[in-house]
Image 1 (cartoon, rainbow over the protein chains, first blue to last red):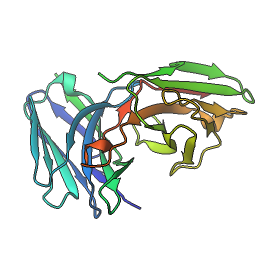
Image 2 (tube, chains in turn green, orange):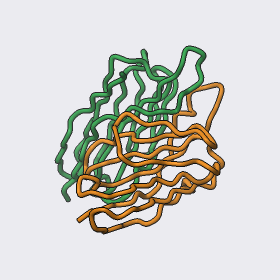
Image 3 (tube, rainbow over the protein chains, first blue to last red):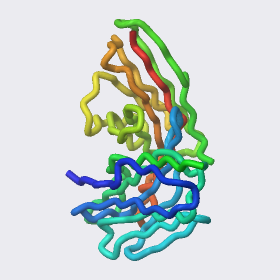
Image 4 (tube, each protein chain N blue to C red):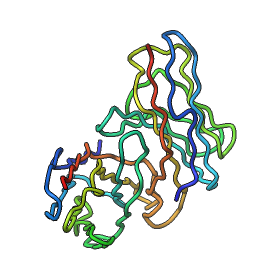
Length: 116
Length: 117
C-alpha cells in the first residue's frame, strides 16, 4: 500500500509570509498532483509533475518533484488571503509496463489560513 | 476547467431512504472515481471504474453501489441511508493512457454534501 505523508497538517500565517508544504513517501509515483480545495467544493487541480527533479511555477506557487519521484513540495511566496484553503497532494501509481493505473494516493491535506 | 457535474449539490434525507448521487462528465474519460471526504480531511476512494461495465471497490469499505452503463455517467446508490453515511461525496474522472505518466491527473466535480438524519 502506497502512503503519502503530508505536512504540516495546519498552517496559519500572515499575509506576505512564505510557506512550504511537503509530501513524502517511501513509494515511487509515476506522477504527482497538487490540488486546492475550498469548503463545500471539489478539489481543483493546480499542477501535475511527472519527471524526477521537475520544477513548475504557477505565479507565486512553486512545485517540485523529488529526483527519485518519492516526494514533492509546494512553496508559496508572499501568501495572500485568497490562498486560504485545503491543499492536497496525490500520487499516481503505475504498473511495471508504465501504464498508469489512474488510482491516486492522497495525502492528509494541509489547511492553510492566510490572515490579512 | 473540467466538465464534470454532480447532482444534487446538497441532500438532507431521513434514515432508511434510498438515494442516488449523480455524476456525469463530458470529457470522454474512461476512468471515473467516487471519493468520500469529511470536512477538511483527506479523500478516501470508495469506488472506481475503468470503463463501461467495469466497477471496482476502492480502498475504503462502503455500503454504496455504483454502475457504469455509459462512459459519461457514473451514479452512486445507497439503498438505505444511515447517519453514518453523512459526508461529502466527490466524483472524479481521468483519461486512460498507455504511455507517459500524466494520465494520473484526475478532475473533480463540485461534490454532493449528504446529511442523513
